[in-house]
Image (cartoon, rainbow, N blue to C red; front, side):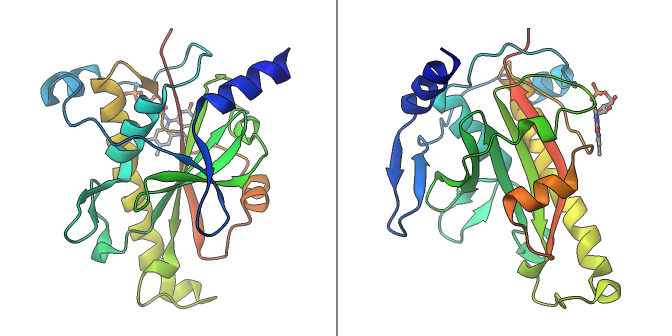
Length: 216
Ligand SMILES: Cc1cc2nc3c(=O)[nH]c(=O)nc-3n(C[C@H](O)[C@H](O)[C@H](O)COP(=O)(O)O)c2cc1C
């Protein structure tokens, strides 16, 4: 029964194969007008602990990811979140029951990274059972002056990555507040197991995860 529900949930999203033979979920074009106004969003922003288990709609997921770190200027590829030296170092991984995907803001789709549901690796200290957890990972190699294996030289880039991830995190929180979704930024997660499951490079630093769902 559980397997059938998982399959139906998965099939509800449009699955495809990209030109590079990757399995992808095509996201919707983001809505241009939705949500409470800015001041109301600030008023409503808070960390939520209890969520419904139902899945996010494809439109909510698409709008959430665009607001988090989508492209808002097609003429130069710049994004909703600023980044130091326009490094665009923050990637968003999307973990769901059917697997974990990487958000590609350019093609507006989710690329399957692993069919593993990695959410249990992030819910250790506070089980939440949200349909989606976003993981924010900075890739220091996007900076021109990244020096592989040289922690001293990369210290500044490491710090910039933390700040960039924090900005994406706040985009997520404010989008959720403005649209009656719940979220909570969390630093705690099983970093070792996640790094292995996502096959991360040394230059990639895992900063925060965000469970997202409809609050109870
Ligand atoms: C950088 C950062 C890391 C956090 N890590 C966790 C965490 O690991 N687990 C958790 O339950 N909450 C975490 N939180 C959420 C805070 O506990 C929460 O923001 C704080 O209690 C204030 O509540 P509010 O967000 O409702 O204002 C984190 C928040 C930030 C900004």
